[in-house]
Structures are given as C-alpha cells and as structure tokens.
View 1: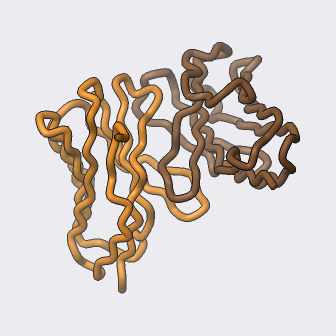
View 2: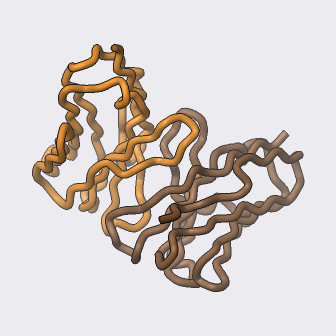
Length: 110
Length: 114
C-alpha cells in the first residue's frame, strides 16, 4: 500500500463548478501538506501548503487537513478552463523530501 | 528572476549507455532536490542536497544512480548502464533552505532509454 493515495481520475466538470480533490495517507509523521498543479510537460507548481491540521484559503482555492482521519482536500470554487491540469498532493514530516500522490487529472469544460 | 533550469530537456539513449542530467537551481537556494516521475504517476524522491553534501539519498534506486553538487549550486544526476526502466521525467527542485515549505520545480528532463 502506498503512503499517499490519490484518485487519478480523470475528473471532468463544467466551468463554474466547485471541484473537490482529496488524498489519504498512512504516515502519522506527516506535518506539511502541499497541493501542486502540473500542466502538461511542465514541472509541478506549488498552489498551497498547510502545516498540521486546519484550513487555508487563497482566492478560489481552499485546502483542508484532517490529521485525525489522515485526509486532505483541495477545493476549487468557480472553476475555470485554465484550471485544467493535474493536481498533486504532497506531504512530508519536515518539508524536505516530499511524498506525492499519483495526481488527479482535472478538465474544466467551457 | 530565473527559475530552476534543467538540461537537456529531452534525452534519448540506448540501453547500457551513461547519461548526465544537469540542474541549475534558483540563485541563492541552498537546498536542491531530485525526483523522478513515471508516466501517470506522481514524482518520487531520489536525493536532496543541503549545500554541497547529500543530506538524504535514500530514494536512489540502486548504485547505478549518483548525484553531485560540487560547488553548492549546479547539480548533476548521473546514471550508469541505463536500463529501459529508467525512462521517466527527472525533475529538479530547489528551495531557499532545507525545510522551507516551497520547493520550486524545473521543467524536467525527459529520458528515454531504447
């Protein structure tokens, strides 16, 4: 079993919809939780990070961490076609070597 | 400012050959990371450097893989006796210090072993 599980999708939603992406993990030592966005043939780009439990909001994006359930989520409000990409969750005990999920491929349809 | 750059962007080689992949981190970043991303998968950690020294090389799959960072800036990932299973995108990332939350990734080198 992988340390980080993420549904690979693909996920396809209409423009303007709320998107929910999530990951589960097994390592209770993880303290740093990140969401990366990766466009085709590009490197991952950090969207948000959260330390320990709680919520964090940045514009249309909200990240949630529930350490008791070992479950993290990313919500995208008012989704746009430009949000179409692969979304990767990543985690680490000390923000050093990151353990990534498989990535979810998301398409926003105009 | 300039981001992380990686060269070459694509590399095609034959099984058994030796390859070198180069990473130029963001200027002033002391931590440098190498990851490998297979098709349809998330990146997997290989090794990271703090300055010139390898702080953690636990992700290197075997002794055919080696990385150096002799002056604490540019890093080279070296793969000996390449195998078809080494085909992947090799990503480099840098951060201001070890433990800084933001790792900035380069575009990757796409390695194809025939």
